[in-house]
Image (cartoon, rainbow, N blue to C red; front, side, top):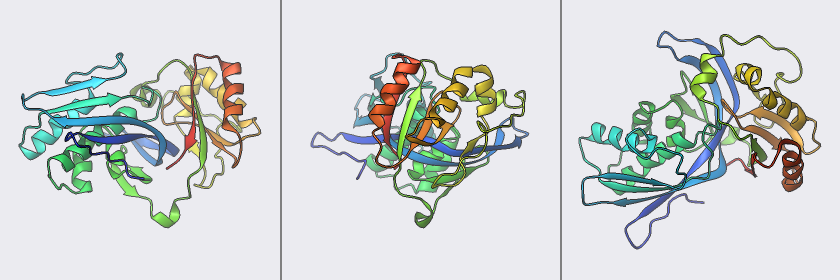
Length: 290
Protein backbone atom coordinates (compact mmCIF):
# COMPACT_ATOMS: atom_id res chain seq x y z
CA UNK A 1 0.00 0.00 0.00
CA UNK A 2 1.35 3.40 -0.94
CA UNK A 3 1.85 5.97 1.80
CA UNK A 4 1.42 8.88 -0.63
CA UNK A 5 -1.87 10.79 -1.01
CA UNK A 6 -1.79 13.58 -3.65
CA UNK A 7 -5.12 15.34 -4.14
CA UNK A 8 -6.77 17.75 -6.57
CA UNK A 9 -5.99 20.85 -4.44
CA UNK A 10 -2.25 20.44 -4.86
CA UNK A 11 -1.82 19.12 -1.32
CA UNK A 12 0.32 16.08 -0.63
CA UNK A 13 -0.10 13.62 2.23
CA UNK A 14 2.13 10.98 3.75
CA UNK A 15 1.85 8.44 6.50
CA UNK A 16 4.70 8.63 9.03
CA UNK A 17 4.91 5.20 10.69
CA UNK A 18 6.14 4.31 14.16
CA UNK A 19 9.08 1.97 14.71
CA UNK A 20 10.24 -0.52 17.24
CA UNK A 21 13.66 -2.01 17.95
CA UNK A 22 13.73 -5.79 17.71
CA UNK A 23 17.09 -5.73 19.40
CA UNK A 24 19.20 -2.89 20.72
CA UNK A 25 22.75 -3.52 21.91
CA UNK A 26 24.96 -0.81 23.39
CA UNK A 27 28.62 -1.38 22.53
CA UNK A 28 30.15 1.52 24.45
CA UNK A 29 30.43 5.29 24.76
CA UNK A 30 31.93 7.25 21.88
CA UNK A 31 34.28 10.21 22.06
CA UNK A 32 31.48 12.49 20.81
CA UNK A 33 29.35 11.57 23.82
CA UNK A 34 26.93 9.33 21.92
CA UNK A 35 26.72 5.57 22.42
CA UNK A 36 27.78 3.06 19.78
CA UNK A 37 24.84 0.78 19.10
CA UNK A 38 23.68 -2.12 16.98
CA UNK A 39 19.95 -2.36 16.40
CA UNK A 40 17.38 -3.71 14.00
CA UNK A 41 14.37 -1.48 13.52
CA UNK A 42 11.08 -2.28 11.84
CA UNK A 43 8.05 -0.16 10.98
CA UNK A 44 4.65 -0.52 12.60
CA UNK A 45 1.21 0.14 11.14
CA UNK A 46 0.72 2.84 13.80
CA UNK A 47 1.13 6.04 11.80
CA UNK A 48 0.89 9.81 11.99
CA UNK A 49 -0.73 11.42 8.97
CA UNK A 50 0.76 14.60 7.54
CA UNK A 51 -0.67 16.97 4.93
CA UNK A 52 1.64 19.34 3.04
CA UNK A 53 0.78 22.34 0.88
CA UNK A 54 2.94 25.09 -0.62
CA UNK A 55 2.46 28.64 0.67
CA UNK A 56 3.13 31.96 -1.06
CA UNK A 57 4.13 34.01 1.99
CA UNK A 58 7.69 32.76 2.74
CA UNK A 59 6.63 31.02 5.98
CA UNK A 60 6.77 27.50 7.34
CA UNK A 61 3.57 26.87 9.32
CA UNK A 62 3.12 23.71 11.37
CA UNK A 63 -0.26 22.82 12.84
CA UNK A 64 -0.55 19.77 15.10
CA UNK A 65 -3.52 17.87 16.51
CA UNK A 66 -1.62 17.44 19.81
CA UNK A 67 -1.54 20.88 21.40
CA UNK A 68 1.06 19.75 23.95
CA UNK A 69 3.74 19.63 21.25
CA UNK A 70 5.72 22.70 20.11
CA UNK A 71 5.02 23.95 16.58
CA UNK A 72 7.84 26.46 16.20
CA UNK A 73 11.43 26.26 14.99
CA UNK A 74 12.35 23.67 17.63
CA UNK A 75 9.93 21.07 16.25
CA UNK A 76 11.74 18.34 14.30
CA UNK A 77 9.37 18.72 11.34
CA UNK A 78 10.22 22.42 10.98
CA UNK A 79 13.90 21.70 11.57
CA UNK A 80 13.71 19.19 8.69
CA UNK A 81 12.51 21.96 6.36
CA UNK A 82 15.37 24.21 7.48
CA UNK A 83 17.96 21.44 7.03
CA UNK A 84 16.73 20.81 3.50
CA UNK A 85 16.83 24.56 2.75
CA UNK A 86 20.47 24.74 3.88
CA UNK A 87 21.39 21.68 1.84
CA UNK A 88 19.76 22.86 -1.39
CA UNK A 89 20.13 26.64 -1.02
CA UNK A 90 16.41 26.92 -1.66
CA UNK A 91 13.51 28.36 0.36
CA UNK A 92 10.51 26.11 1.01
CA UNK A 93 7.37 27.96 2.10
CA UNK A 94 5.00 25.26 3.24
CA UNK A 95 2.08 24.40 5.50
CA UNK A 96 2.38 21.17 7.47
CA UNK A 97 -0.74 19.74 9.11
CA UNK A 98 0.22 16.93 11.46
CA UNK A 99 -2.36 14.46 12.78
CA UNK A 100 -0.58 12.77 15.69
CA UNK A 101 -1.36 9.14 16.44
CA UNK A 102 2.06 8.07 17.74
CA UNK A 103 2.51 9.06 21.41
CA UNK A 104 5.52 11.17 22.37
CA UNK A 105 8.32 9.91 24.61
CA UNK A 106 7.23 6.37 23.88
CA UNK A 107 10.28 4.83 22.19
CA UNK A 108 8.34 4.65 18.91
CA UNK A 109 10.19 7.35 16.96
CA UNK A 110 7.19 9.56 16.19
CA UNK A 111 9.08 12.86 15.94
CA UNK A 112 11.87 11.33 13.85
CA UNK A 113 9.33 9.72 11.52
CA UNK A 114 7.56 13.04 11.03
CA UNK A 115 10.89 14.72 10.19
CA UNK A 116 11.73 12.03 7.64
CA UNK A 117 8.28 12.41 6.09
CA UNK A 118 8.94 16.14 5.66
CA UNK A 119 12.20 15.40 3.83
CA UNK A 120 10.54 12.81 1.61
CA UNK A 121 7.52 15.01 0.86
CA UNK A 122 9.48 18.12 -0.13
CA UNK A 123 11.82 15.97 -2.21
CA UNK A 124 8.79 14.90 -4.28
CA UNK A 125 6.82 18.17 -4.21
CA UNK A 126 9.87 20.25 -5.09
CA UNK A 127 11.14 17.81 -7.76
CA UNK A 128 14.51 17.74 -6.00
CA UNK A 129 15.25 14.12 -6.99
CA UNK A 130 17.62 13.63 -4.05
CA UNK A 131 18.48 9.93 -3.56
CA UNK A 132 17.69 8.12 -0.32
CA UNK A 133 21.26 8.15 0.95
CA UNK A 134 21.48 11.94 0.51
CA UNK A 135 18.16 12.50 2.29
CA UNK A 136 19.33 10.15 5.05
CA UNK A 137 22.53 12.18 5.49
CA UNK A 138 20.42 15.33 5.91
CA UNK A 139 18.21 13.46 8.38
CA UNK A 140 21.24 12.40 10.44
CA UNK A 141 21.78 16.09 11.28
CA UNK A 142 18.36 16.09 12.96
CA UNK A 143 18.42 12.86 14.97
CA UNK A 144 19.82 9.36 15.05
CA UNK A 145 16.54 7.65 14.03
CA UNK A 146 15.67 9.97 11.13
CA UNK A 147 17.82 8.17 8.50
CA UNK A 148 16.05 4.88 9.23
CA UNK A 149 12.67 6.47 8.54
CA UNK A 150 13.98 7.95 5.28
CA UNK A 151 14.65 4.41 4.05
CA UNK A 152 11.12 3.47 5.14
CA UNK A 153 11.70 -0.28 5.59
CA UNK A 154 13.32 -2.76 8.00
CA UNK A 155 16.95 -1.79 8.59
CA UNK A 156 20.00 -2.64 10.65
CA UNK A 157 21.46 0.51 12.19
CA UNK A 158 24.93 1.12 13.63
CA UNK A 159 27.03 4.00 14.89
CA UNK A 160 24.71 6.20 16.94
CA UNK A 161 21.94 4.83 14.71
CA UNK A 162 22.68 6.88 11.60
CA UNK A 163 24.56 4.15 9.67
CA UNK A 164 21.63 2.37 8.03
CA UNK A 165 21.59 -0.86 6.03
CA UNK A 166 18.21 -2.03 4.71
CA UNK A 167 17.48 -5.67 5.56
CA UNK A 168 17.50 -7.78 2.37
CA UNK A 169 13.96 -8.70 1.40
CA UNK A 170 14.54 -12.42 1.84
CA UNK A 171 15.78 -11.94 5.41
CA UNK A 172 12.80 -9.96 6.70
CA UNK A 173 9.95 -12.11 8.05
CA UNK A 174 6.39 -11.36 7.10
CA UNK A 175 4.10 -9.05 9.01
CA UNK A 176 3.60 -10.11 12.62
CA UNK A 177 0.87 -9.12 15.12
CA UNK A 178 1.96 -6.89 18.00
CA UNK A 179 0.41 -5.24 21.05
CA UNK A 180 1.71 -1.97 22.52
CA UNK A 181 1.00 -0.53 25.95
CA UNK A 182 2.35 2.72 27.37
CA UNK A 183 1.74 4.05 30.89
CA UNK A 184 0.79 7.70 31.17
CA UNK A 185 4.35 9.03 31.29
CA UNK A 186 7.07 9.62 28.66
CA UNK A 187 10.76 8.73 28.86
CA UNK A 188 13.50 10.82 27.28
CA UNK A 189 15.82 8.79 25.06
CA UNK A 190 18.68 11.09 26.10
CA UNK A 191 17.98 10.29 29.77
CA UNK A 192 17.94 6.52 29.13
CA UNK A 193 21.28 6.56 27.32
CA UNK A 194 22.88 8.89 29.89
CA UNK A 195 21.96 6.54 32.73
CA UNK A 196 22.90 3.30 31.01
CA UNK A 197 26.47 3.34 32.36
CA UNK A 198 25.20 3.86 35.92
CA UNK A 199 22.70 0.99 35.80
CA UNK A 200 23.47 -2.39 37.34
CA UNK A 201 24.13 -5.59 35.42
CA UNK A 202 21.05 -7.78 35.51
CA UNK A 203 20.60 -11.48 35.05
CA UNK A 204 17.53 -13.70 34.87
CA UNK A 205 14.67 -14.42 32.52
CA UNK A 206 13.44 -10.82 32.39
CA UNK A 207 16.55 -9.66 30.50
CA UNK A 208 17.41 -12.86 28.65
CA UNK A 209 17.30 -12.73 24.82
CA UNK A 210 13.98 -14.02 23.52
CA UNK A 211 13.57 -16.03 20.31
CA UNK A 212 11.40 -14.54 17.60
CA UNK A 213 10.98 -14.88 13.81
CA UNK A 214 13.40 -11.92 13.48
CA UNK A 215 16.09 -13.39 15.72
CA UNK A 216 16.86 -12.94 19.40
CA UNK A 217 15.07 -9.94 20.89
CA UNK A 218 16.88 -7.98 23.63
CA UNK A 219 17.19 -4.33 24.65
CA UNK A 220 20.11 -3.04 26.73
CA UNK A 221 18.16 0.11 27.64
CA UNK A 222 15.84 -1.97 29.80
CA UNK A 223 18.53 -1.82 32.50
CA UNK A 224 18.35 1.92 33.32
CA UNK A 225 14.66 2.24 32.43
CA UNK A 226 13.43 -0.64 34.60
CA UNK A 227 15.68 0.51 37.46
CA UNK A 228 13.88 3.87 37.63
CA UNK A 229 10.46 2.92 36.27
CA UNK A 230 9.83 -0.37 38.06
CA UNK A 231 6.28 -0.65 36.72
CA UNK A 232 7.71 -1.27 33.23
CA UNK A 233 9.77 -4.23 34.42
CA UNK A 234 6.71 -5.63 36.15
CA UNK A 235 4.67 -5.02 33.00
CA UNK A 236 7.16 -6.98 30.89
CA UNK A 237 7.02 -9.87 33.33
CA UNK A 238 3.22 -9.81 33.23
CA UNK A 239 3.13 -9.71 29.43
CA UNK A 240 5.46 -12.70 29.18
CA UNK A 241 3.07 -14.66 31.38
CA UNK A 242 0.06 -14.04 29.11
CA UNK A 243 -0.98 -16.92 26.84
CA UNK A 244 -1.27 -14.65 23.78
CA UNK A 245 2.32 -13.34 24.03
CA UNK A 246 5.36 -15.03 22.48
CA UNK A 247 7.87 -12.26 23.32
CA UNK A 248 7.88 -8.89 25.11
CA UNK A 249 10.37 -6.05 25.12
CA UNK A 250 10.81 -2.38 25.94
CA UNK A 251 10.43 -0.47 22.66
CA UNK A 252 13.55 1.62 22.17
CA UNK A 253 14.06 3.80 25.24
CA UNK A 254 10.41 3.37 26.32
CA UNK A 255 8.00 4.00 27.86
CA UNK A 256 6.09 1.65 25.54
CA UNK A 257 6.17 -2.09 26.07
CA UNK A 258 5.95 -4.21 22.92
CA UNK A 259 4.45 -7.70 22.89
CA UNK A 260 4.75 -10.01 19.90
CA UNK A 261 1.56 -12.05 19.72
CA UNK A 262 0.97 -15.60 18.67
CA UNK A 263 -0.90 -15.86 15.36
CA UNK A 264 -4.71 -15.81 15.35
CA UNK A 265 -5.13 -14.49 18.90
CA UNK A 266 -7.65 -11.83 19.85
CA UNK A 267 -5.56 -8.79 20.78
CA UNK A 268 -8.66 -7.03 22.16
CA UNK A 269 -8.87 -9.61 24.94
CA UNK A 270 -5.27 -8.96 25.94
CA UNK A 271 -5.82 -5.18 25.76
CA UNK A 272 -8.84 -5.38 28.06
CA UNK A 273 -6.91 -7.51 30.54
CA UNK A 274 -3.94 -5.12 30.45
CA UNK A 275 -6.10 -2.02 31.03
CA UNK A 276 -7.88 -3.72 33.90
CA UNK A 277 -4.51 -4.39 35.53
CA UNK A 278 -2.65 -1.16 34.76
CA UNK A 279 -5.45 1.37 34.52
CA UNK A 280 -7.45 3.14 31.86
CA UNK A 281 -4.90 5.95 31.66
CA UNK A 282 -2.58 3.62 29.73
CA UNK A 283 -2.43 3.95 25.96
CA UNK A 284 -2.72 0.73 23.97
CA UNK A 285 -2.48 -0.23 20.32
CA UNK A 286 -2.97 -3.53 18.53
CA UNK A 287 -1.48 -3.79 15.07
CA UNK A 288 1.24 -5.35 12.96
CA UNK A 289 4.79 -4.85 11.79
CA UNK A 290 5.13 -3.61 8.21
